[in-house]
Image 1 (tube, rainbow, N blue to C red):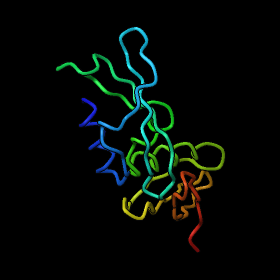
Image 2: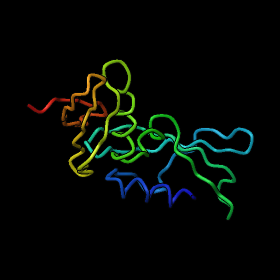
Image 3: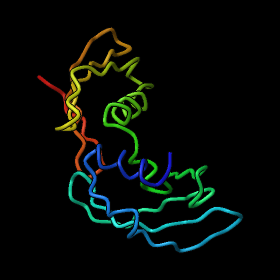
Image 4: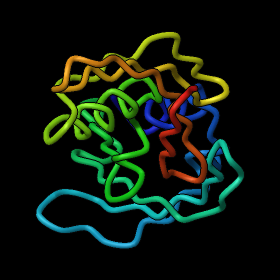
Length: 136
């Protein structure tokens, strides 16, 4: 994926990303360029993301998100499932996530407890953090 394709992939996830021509090259080490990129997350948090580019400017260019932007590249579905699997252990035997709404970043989770009981929860992501609330 080149710089333009990387930019477009984040735009499709709801990010505002400045045009590639505005990216600022901050270093070049061992054939890889590092760029600072002004972005706004889907929840309107403004930041400077980093992009590492191998073979910068060539037909073989490969752009990779770095640091916090790398984690942001996951979809809500991937992130909520990773969060839910981290809840397993102790009293929780397994967590199944269903009815995911990507746009609102909310999902319904069913927790299967070691005691044999089954509990339903809503998982919501706000400002990059998850909340996990039991439905009564």
